[in-house]
Length: 249
Image 1 (cartoon, one colour):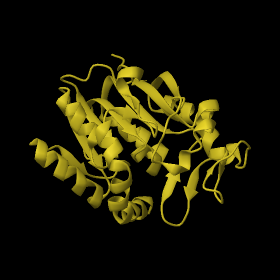
Image 2 (cartoon, helix red, strand yellow; image 1 turned 90 degrees about the vertical axis):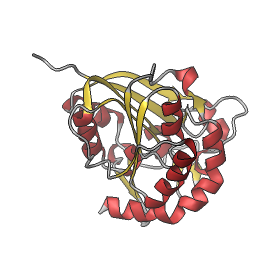
Image 3 (cartoon, rainbow, N blue to C red; image 1 turned 30 degrees about the vertical axis):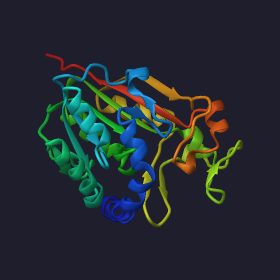
Image 4 (cartoon, rainbow, N blue to C red; image 1 turned 120 degrees about the vertical axis):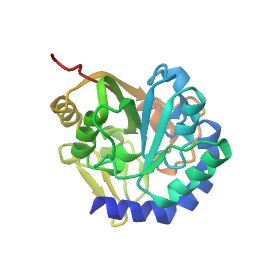
């Protein structure tokens, strides 16, 4: 049910989304979050050359294409036909392929296929955490990296739906964080402890939690993450960095 709704949602807003955000995403393709903090500063993925990499929720595949240009065997996956249409145009101009339309809750890949699976505000937001984490664990090789950027629980419990922005007060029940359904799309969040227990159940070790602070004088095209002063004082986004435990022989 979530997949069908979210596919329809992204198909309906894809053109507007790319018009609003595509230029910034294209200018800074290897960067994290709404403030586009460079991967070269954070070093989340490390050396990607000759690594098999999967991007979950690739959109127009700016990340995927940039990773391929850095020597990775990168594959972009997205649920939305329209988002992938934008990606295919970019890939065609670069003479590349490796785009897949699929649901992150049921990845169409064999076990132990990838060295790195990552997501930047993509499928890990719009798909069930329980399903996505299990699927990523299955397709990652032992010792592989799973990294994903998303809104923090702190931001989500301070988000004022009526105002459409974060406020400096708590408004949501932290312990009830689960599904956000506005009638158009379904998004997901968990409390910190629930995330960690989920990771452990599927053989992941937390290597880092990179809490992103908006740079001074930062601007963003994502209005639901403003004001910037809020994201200078409290983390609006973070990047989970996980390692799949090696197999025991």
